[in-house]
Image (spheres, rainbow, N blue to C red):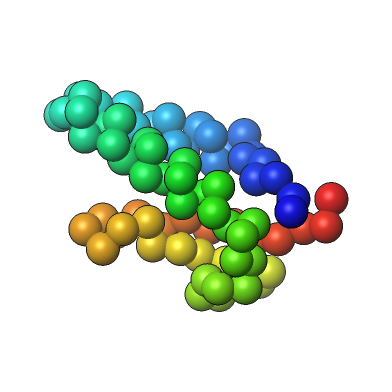
Length: 78
């Protein structure tokens, strides 16, 4: 199983999202970060389970039914 490797752009976006939520609720920000990271870590377990993304070669996963946040990702062999 290949590891999940976050791009710098994705890490920056995650930090921006968490900072925004944290301004309103520190607890909610912590829960959201854990939810996103847990979802991303599951990608290698079922790499073909998720919906095609808007960009060619990318997949997407809605992180929870109560958020409109999508995680875009792609499979690689290295």
